[in-house]
Amino acid sequence: MTRLITALGFALALIFLNAEKTRADEGPPPPPPPTVQGLLSACTRTYHSNEAYEYAMGVNKGFCWGYIAGVAATIGPAGLACVGDPTTGKPPPLRAMEQAFTNWAQKHPEAWSKQEAAGVTEALRETWPCPRK
Image (cartoon, rainbow, N blue to C red):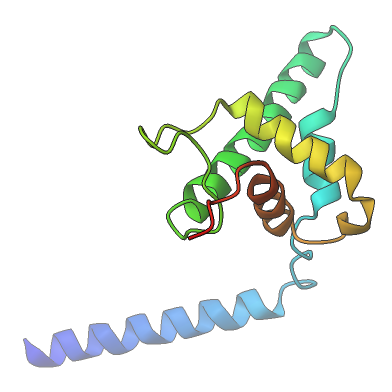
């Protein structure tokens, strides 16, 4: 029984090592991290009144809001910004966070090549700064 388990473990290790080698040999490296400009585009893109366009707008807006909400949920507990009501801990509406980001990004085109998380962090920090202690 011990030999069987050892043999299975060895076989699985070989399979995983071969899979990693295969992935490394496949094509170019992944694209660079998304940028502030890309997120700004997703947040502000508008479409014609066509079902396919409305679907695409929903996907972009959903990505925009989800990304910004995720950054806000991460930086708040880390003390990088005080996003939300300090008494209840309730975050501001997604539209308010989106507006904070789009306003900031439009005012800072020099930051468009930065990673989107850095841009969202700066925007939320400027809009909802933590009180100085």
